[in-house]
Image 1 (cartoon, rainbow, N blue to C red):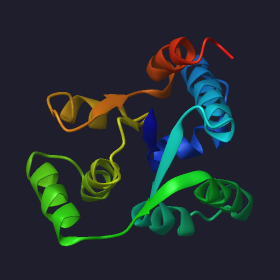
Image 2 (image 1 turned 90 degrees about the vertical axis):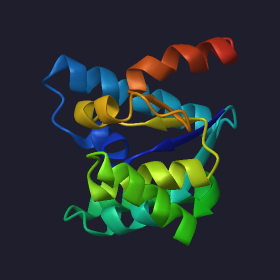
Image 3 (image 1 turned 60 degrees about the vertical axis):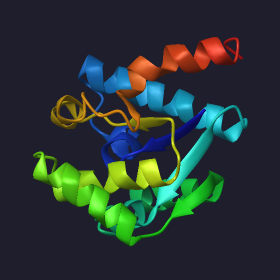
Length: 149
């Protein structure tokens, strides 16, 4: 399985953990990270992740997220096809940065786009190019594929 985690998913473990949903999503994201490190799943990275992460005002968080780039099997760069696809997503109401993330995931041949953004998941519900999941919802599938390592 090849996955792309958008910026909000990448940041989830750093969010305030008093809300149970945030805690569960953070734990799920950490499980996904462990699966990447063990080579059970592949990570797709992109230039838009770099751009967004570079704007993070918290140096520790910025550095920790940037470290995940070295685990990626591909680093998607901007292309005209990616921008055209993002424009189509944006025309359907997806925010421009989110449209770039989804387009990069598709360009990187990710099987799954992972986000914690409910609005984005709703807007992407009907697309056929990639499956869209909350981190909690994909963990079960990862666990089944790799026998709960």
